[in-house]
Amino acid sequence: MPARSSASESPRVVRCLLAVLALVLLVGPASAQITDIQPVEPLDFEEDLEFPWLLVGVTGFAGASGVAMDDLNEAVRLLNLEIAAQGSEGISYDSFGSVVSLGTGIRAIVLKRWVVQTDFERLIRSAQVGGVTSNSEIRIPANVITTSLSFDLLAKQTLGMGAGLGLAWYSSRAEQVVRRTRPGQDEEELGRVKLEGSAVGPVFQGYFEAKFTDRIYVNVTGGYRIAKMKDADISGVTELEEAVADANADADFIFVPVAECTNCDEMEEPPPGEEEPEPVPAELALRGGGSDLDWSGLWGRVALTVYVNMPTF
Image 1 (cartoon, rainbow, N blue to C red):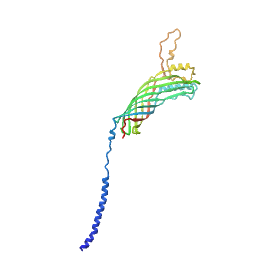
Image 2: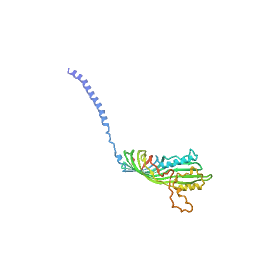
Image 3: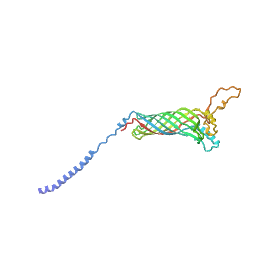
Image 4: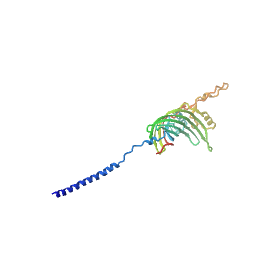
């Protein structure tokens, strides 16, 4: 009996040993997988702290904007009526409702939030009538120097977005140029009517900036500006009329100035025997009586900025 008992228990012992071995084999790989999981390292924001407190860039841009030009457009309307009255249907000056621009400037980001920019911009637009033998061109260019301050809402290395305001100085280079080309001769300029002056006005703007390369960023800016120049200094009207008369030109619309003398009739020579009156300065104005130039309107531009001291990582 004792021998039978030990023989029957031996398979039971073997089964117990196999079960323990299987448990060890299962637990071992599981514990190894758990220990192999690496802890997640916290995000390192020290990169942003390495930005200089003053980030400086050079920017170049092109843009377009609307302009008001109420007085000038009224003068153009009257010129077009005169053209039509002479029987030249279908020939007219275009009105001035927009300009294009090119410019460059210095852009600085202070403490990652404040964006200071000073730029030079040239506003460009013209309208022309005429042909091969003669032509008249009205131009309304202006030189603009603007300084603005904006606040960046994102302050990230790759993106920027903000809003701000600035102050701009406008210098008018507007003029009407009249030219004629005689057969077999080079083109000659008969005269210029200049509309000069300056104005200062506020600029309201918003911008979006995105990283293009390590140092080059694309910038889109838009807003509204107030740029009305009152009482333009008008000159060249009488000189143009005298030059046209000396050239024996036909009195057609090509040689009609965009501005006129409003008191020239009062400046006629007195009849014989009467004393000559005190000289009266010529009062010049745009046709229709206005004398203001207005570049106010919505504007937008696309720029590329190269930050010279941008840290690269």
